[in-house]
Image 1 (cartoon, rainbow, N blue to C red):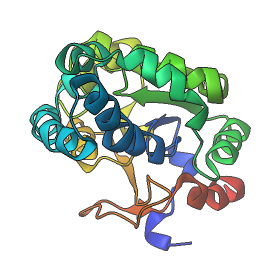
Image 2: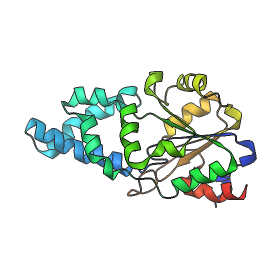
Image 3: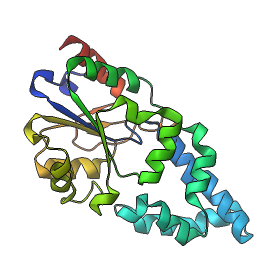
Image 4: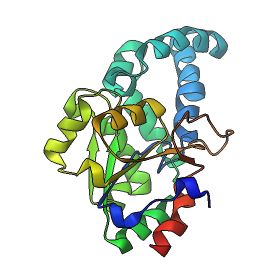
Length: 226
């Protein structure tokens, strides 16, 4: 265990957890958007998959960090595809990251409030829930869409707190997106951890100056010994 990553569980009441890349394997989303959707777009428009990928890349880049990036309706309109239906077809590929369920169970045993906080569209959460029943393993879940801004936006956290009255100084937040972590840090959430391996099929990613673990499972020992 990396001592720098150790969590003082006595100082934590609430654990805010990202979904994709933290609890669930980002491998699904990377495959869905980088492989499956270009193929479907190519068929829809009568072009090659490589040509489709080239056309889609700038559209995707332009939306990064905005609520549209996560919006099923936006991409359905933009691409001329029923993104929700395609996700529903592909839902069997959704998987937890190794150790995620153990970690959630450990938090329950410690009496910590487990809160899912995701940028994913509500329909995406509902579709994934059909496969992995993720909402059964947390005490509350929130998507960013009703708040009209993603977690990257500094105004997100105050809006979340109106519905989920966590104390920032006694909250642990875990996410794989460093821009989101920057936003949370700016709001004053004290305990922050990054996930280095959100996609089980890819190498570890750079988490800048954030204390990081490869996966939630790396925190289980701390939870179990608190």
